[in-house]
Image 1 (cartoon, helix red, strand yellow):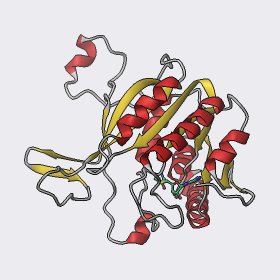
Image 2: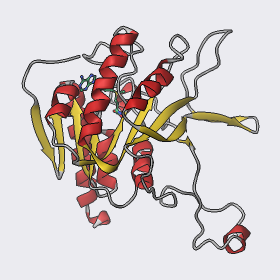
Image 3: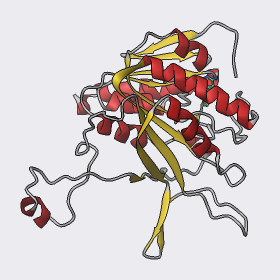
Length: 277
Ligand SMILES: C[S@@+](CC[C@H](N)C(=O)[O-])C[C@H]1O[C@@H](n2cnc3c(N)ncnc32)[C@H](O)[C@@H]1O
């Protein structure tokens, strides 16, 4: 979990990446300086990461996550948002809920968003999921996204993250200024279809860019700095770049750091290309 070697720092455009242990680095960051934290920590379910061993005791894991979240609490601005993405497994179904309850001492659960990775509608399935081969358990098609804040009172931009009205007559009838409404707390964000592991950057647990992008839109326009303390392949930093914000990523594994740097470099080059200027 911890590494004694000195953190290494990299820059990509206005974004920063630190290779090292997130708890050590978070504890050294200045208080009240980060507007939005979006992260998917290791879930402690034995995923085959490049170097991190994803198999602590349950109590050890929950204690470590409490320490991580206490450090995040300290660096968040008073009206900041912390989006924590986590899921359980059939063997550990209580884990996300246990963690959420432990975090009551530190945060208000302002919203509980369900990230739907796949859903069956009218007899056909949208999205992808890893099938659970068991007569006892259903396939797990969703994950949690706990929206944690310091006060529970953070003003959000619900329409920026919203959707158009299906029935356009509602716009005038209900006196809305624009064709946009809150999308609610179930977000259908399927993974892109991939055929090879390299398309997922050889990482076992990434989220789609659309997930952190939607979190940033929902948090709204007053944000500047976005942090992902378990950056993995840099997905949150790609979202920050696309939303015109400054991203900071922390990742312990040198291989994933190099993947994130390459992804960001490609994103920055695409933004500079003549079609996008
Ligand atoms: C669920 S993955 C995050 C994936 C990321 N959301 C993405 O889209 O690529 C969790 C990451 O945390 C990293 N990690 C594990 N322990 C860490 C630690 N102590 N400090 C920093 N990173 C750590 C793992 O190497 C892994 O890449």
